[in-house]
Image (cartoon, rainbow, N blue to C red):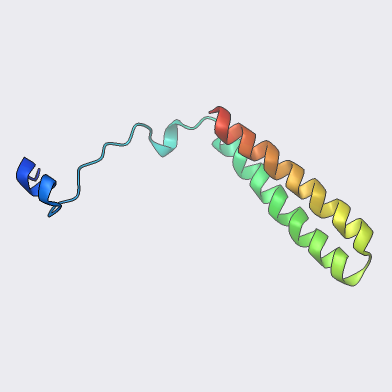
Length: 79
């Protein structure tokens, strides 16, 4: 049911929004999901190594995870 113009102007009904893309249309979704999984595993491993083993190596692991996350973000922007 579409609200009348007066109801929309008064703010009684929220405006109807039409989305341009569907979730299925993202061709890079599989690659982005894999990159996100790698990021989460590396970030967790980096924190564990940082706390329990060596802070320098842990820092390098976390920085590598951040680099992978930046690649995933660039892929999201390029879609």
